[in-house]
Image (tube, rainbow over all chains, first blue to last red; front, side, top):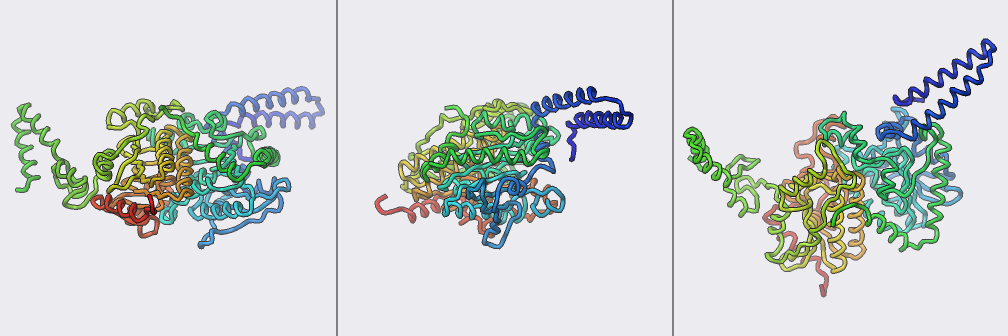
Length: 316
Length: 291
């Protein structure tokens, strides 16, 4: 497991405990009291640490290379998944994956951005940065779900839509804009979950949903703290201040009614126990689906419209 | 000696003479002129304004602010501004090297505006329309909650009155100081455009120099018809971000209106002098019987 800078002390204590165990085993001394004390200290320290993370530390957890990705969640919480490839216009963007599946037996359409864990995988998935063709594939699947009354679940973990020549030539902005507009028209329940990075329009392009959830250590923002720091502070090293100022954490966004719920992560983050994370997520998805089960097509649309209609703080 | 040289010489002579009142007069004279950013010609401001802020020598289109744009497009005396009382809050109490409140105060002082968009109702060649016109001079035309709200309200007004909407964009993107709240304006405005689609009402967007980021990725490019003004640069990601990401040199005409036209991303390009006629034509052709 890759250890983050701010977690180092936890590992130091763990090493100490390990040492004590070794000594105890070799010498036959009873050190169980000491070990227990250290264990207790470690757990207390961890709770204190992870409950009070700075935004920039959360950012590191959200970006952790071993954080569960889209296909992990598919494996850990769905059955009968069948991927539906391609935009039918010549591309199959791997940064967005989607298909039909069952969640606790219920048929759903599930779509998400995909990140790799190794360099090879990341090259395949383009580090989770979709091209316009990815958004168009997603739209094709949204419309399919709409025709066959499948609730839509989107799982979002992206540093943003890809900034590239071909992306601009084939309409990155338009592809996202069209998704925002067309998602407003869908007549099925939509739940969007920010599972890791929810960066800018690239994330929003899959997130015009009735319910928007966020994992505890995920972040959601208009621009990456590094990008913001380099523009407003003219200094990318001011990312910590930018992360603070941008109010990117799940708790902040809950306060501004931008999200509807927070999915609890195991102590230390989702990568410490992907199965527990997936179980927590699944429970929240199921209860959200239950809440919307009796809503008509029109009610679902109205609910989604009024949700986004209310967003924003201004003077009048 | 052409006028420009004469002006230059005269300025140099007077600077040499240096009595302070002469310098003052000279400054007043300088205020009458504007150098073309493209061909360097000294242009008389009055003449430039008369020419819709387009250089008569090289056709360079200067950026125009929202009020000037409205006066160029809307029939005289028909514009009725709406929701001008909606202004930015500071929900995040955002401070970078300067506070958001201070930036807003300065923008209000510098511009004849209190936000980066002017919305209202007006007529173009006698056709009633709802308008949202952005202003790049106001905090880079950035879209925060107030801009999103005003754009959404003018669309809702058009839905109520069954009018077409024209959005003229000029924006660097979402307003960072409102973070996720400004991101959500992209969704809010796009959902409003969805209602225009469902009501089968015409929505035209005019993309002007420059239109980027959150506005490109929301109501800016959702027009049933998308017109770009000649010379405008339009894109999702900024040039510098793309260069840093892909470490390649970009084509010189990258993200220009002409480039986007070539790649099928916009319907047409209009010179400023023809923009009103272009819009009038579109409005008249799409007019339904009995409207």
